Image (cartoon, one colour):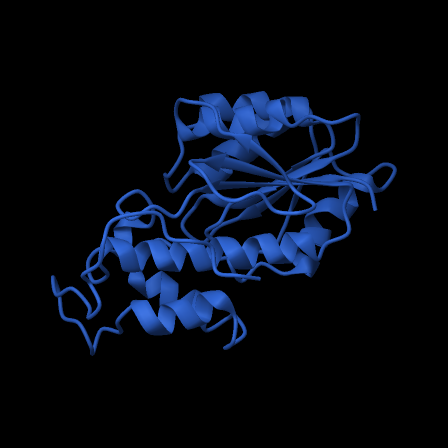
Length: 237
């Protein structure tokens, strides 16, 4: 199946990822959750039949067979999103970009984002809204249209709507995908873990590292908070 999937991600370094999980988590616990979320996302994309898989990474992670890794550009999140599309453009074919904050992602979700772009007469874009107003997936038949992302404010309740509007102003038909919840807070982590397989990396990491409201009160750091600061390895496949 033709087409490309990009995963935009940060290396799971304590203090630099999933900071909104702290508290109740320690920075190292939050990084462990991020590592699990990224590993599950990469595994899902690896299981999806596409021509090319790209990890657009901020930081360092080991290379993965079957993947191309590129460094993210500097700048705002909008700059990095636009740059990920521009820097990984292949010889034609649609592109779908996802992040590492929706570890409940399935092969079916990716196919829903990509297949309409492969169909003759299909939409010019697919957009998966996130429950917080952002988006979890953007697919483009022509990835050059991603340049609009550099001018759209991110991490707002209107980011998804503004992205859709910007693409429609370019004359694109935008197909809406299913709405997914992304992981920012401890409540998000538990809600999303409940949607994953109990033996998934993310669900296991959340059960180990993210206290429930009953086990850690406001401002209280969970057990296992201590530990050396350093990169958290991706959970093995």
